[in-house]
Every structure is written in C-alpha cells, then in structure tokens.
Image 1 (cartoon, chains in turn red, cyan):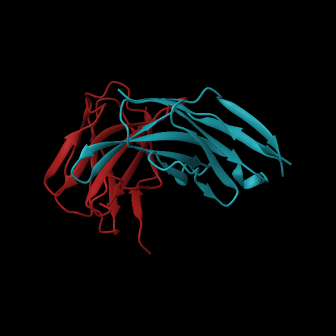
Image 2 (cartoon, one colour):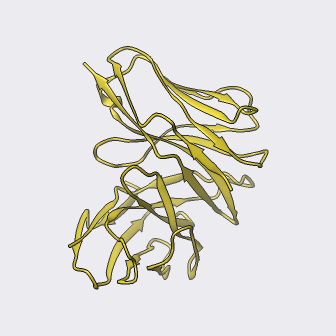
Image 3 (cartoon, helix red, strand yellow):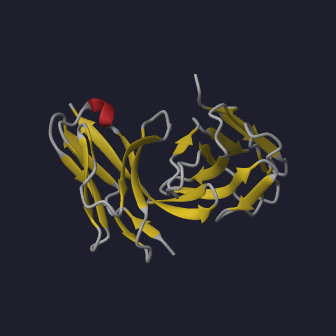
Length: 116
Length: 117
C-alpha cells in the first residue's frame, strides 16, 4: 500500500537534546513538508522540499533542521535551540498535477514529541 | 498575507441532523484553492472536500457540501445526516502557491465537532 509513514508515534526528549523525526513516503511524490500542530492552533509550516537536495524554510523554521538525501525521505531534527518543542508534528507530501498550481497534500499519522 | 478564521471553537449536533461550520479567509489572490480537513481522535488529517476559487459551483462530496461565497471570502462546510464517526476537529485551509511543485496550506484554528447520539 502506498502512503506516508512517520516514526516514532510518541517521542520523549530531555531538554538540551537533539532529536530526529522520521518521515518516509512511497507515493513517488516530489514535494515533502513538515508541519507543527499546537493545542488551539492550526498546523504551521516548518520546512518544505521540492526535490532531492533542496529545501526551504517555512514560517517557523527556527530551531529545526531537515535533509532531503532521498526522494522518499525527509527527516526533521528538532534541535536544542527550539525553545518550545513539545508539539504534534505532521509530515506531508504532494505531486505536481500537470500545469496546475494545485498539488493535493497527503499527510502522515504524525509524531507526538514531549520534552521532559 | 493570507489568514483563515474559524470563529466556532466547538459545536455539537444530534445524530442525523445537519450542522454548518463557518470559515472566513483573507487574500488578495484571484485564483486559489480552499479545503476542509477532518482530524479525528487518531489525529490523522483527512481531506474532506476542496473548492477551486474560479469555479462558481459549490463542491459536494456525499454528505459534505460547501457554501463558497468568493466576494464575502466565506467558505462554510455543511454536514448532512451527521454520524457519530463525524466527531472530529475540522480545519479550514487555504492553499498558497510557493512555486515549482510546492504549495503551503494555511490553516484556521479548527472547530471541534461533537455528534451526540
């Protein structure tokens, strides 16, 4: 079955530690995204990538880093510089639909990160 | 900058009845896409319905339909014959084109819908 997987589902981190969230897709999608969700707020874009070895900052990139070494994978590292990392993190991917600027995004199941 | 506003933090509806969730947005663009996503307790984001701004006809998907008022920048979701499985957080979202093959979804703060038996 094609889809997006995120691991782990729950992640606990001590303050001052870096942690990496995994996102893998087998949909052959070119673009991948990371969103953050906090209680009472909608999702906010952290980073996105159009193609392998290319990525761009979203609205709240400070304290995060990403890599895109393979088309299928887009891991997110939450660094110790992120002031308030406890949140729910969602990965998404999309494929270009012809000449249209519309590209539906498909979401993974998410990772809940808690800083202790 | 585009913004999306959902003014109803929580709503409740009886099973089999109809409920309407409100959404307004602000943009200077003429052509764009709007979406309603559902997030059940599993927290999986599920696309419910989408609307292309240049289409005047309101989108429908089975029991879900929208009332798209472009001039008023309003995009409400109507759920008919509500079912217990419709209980979820519902997010309205605006799609902003970033270039190349990428878009950004700008989300509202969500409406928590509870369907009562």
